[in-house]
Amino acid sequence: MRRLLPLLTLLIACRSEVAPFRWTTGAHEYDCIVRDRMVDGVRQQTLTIDAEGGTFHREGTNLIAIGMMELADTNESLLVTQWVGGANTYELAVYRLVNGKVFEVLNAVTGSTELAYLDLGDDGTYDIVTYERGSGGGMSPGKTYVHTWREGRFFRREVTAISAQ
Image (cartoon, rainbow, N blue to C red; front, side, top):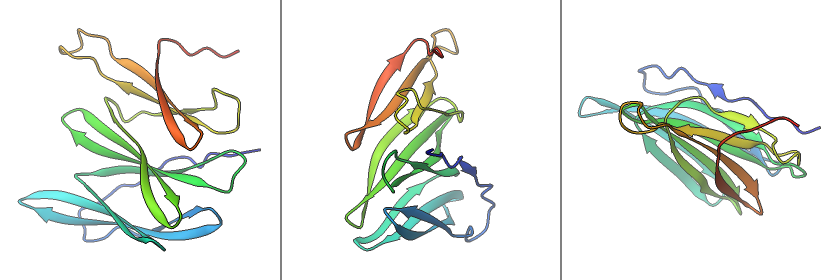
């Protein structure tokens, strides 16, 4: 039975460093850390991942969640992060390690911090469901998207309904 490690919500306080965490994928463990710094009065955060192929850095304004998503029938997991993207927007960024290098395999701007993880294909790997707000102060409906991992990448499709069968 495959399992999804739930997103671990980190309360990132205004301090110089957040406790490090480990990302286990492909039978290896990688050291990761989030650091805070002030730039012109605005807190910036940097996610750093030390891997064999070099050190990866990702900067943003506020990292609000980190989690790992296991892939079915492999010993590989993806690193799932969620960042504040601006006024009422959020950024979902998912990373994969290949040959010792970190690659961004999904970047989606969303209208909510709420994400759903569902195994819609019944293949043991979870799909990520996101919601994008509509425009016009709520007058235009938002859209729901399913991001499905297949053949080494995410495929995105808009959905109008998800039903259990």
